[in-house]
Length: 238
Image (cartoon, rainbow, N blue to C red):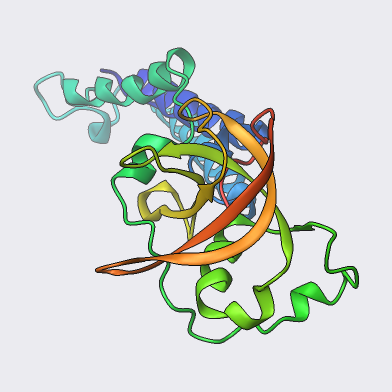
């Protein structure tokens, strides 16, 4: 592979990264705040590759640095062509965000928070009968570790359906710290309603329920009073 061709490949890689960052596709891999990092990385790849190609084409034919005496001065290992693979993968394959299959491989037990949140998140809703919209990851933690502030309250959660054992099912979301490699499933056991299809996105309303006790900890639960199928959000992670 000649250096100018290798540079062109790197340009394609940088362009693919920029394309991911300028569309919502990048949200399937990383948190929203990392968009600017992807844009910067893609732009740097493009600029460096173009600069390298221009510098290589301007070399004089007799430049000793351009040839090692065996006609290989402009060649790179054939393995460099493997850089083309991720480009075609991004163009051809459209992988979905992590869903029920990933959640089923994890425990529905939410870890104890380092610092209690308190019930300040309920202050905006003076009417205790009105459903309070809440992130699944927040409910999964607070419903177990802050029972007193949750009892008797109604909540609204949006997530995908994860089937459990013996007919149980969960409203789930994947939480990210950085990227999908560290994705953690947050799951809330849904009671009182038949399970929708696996991976179906739903918005459920219901009342706080006593957590389910397991050997490895307690699992948040919600007594469902209403289920509505919804379209997956652009950012499916929390």
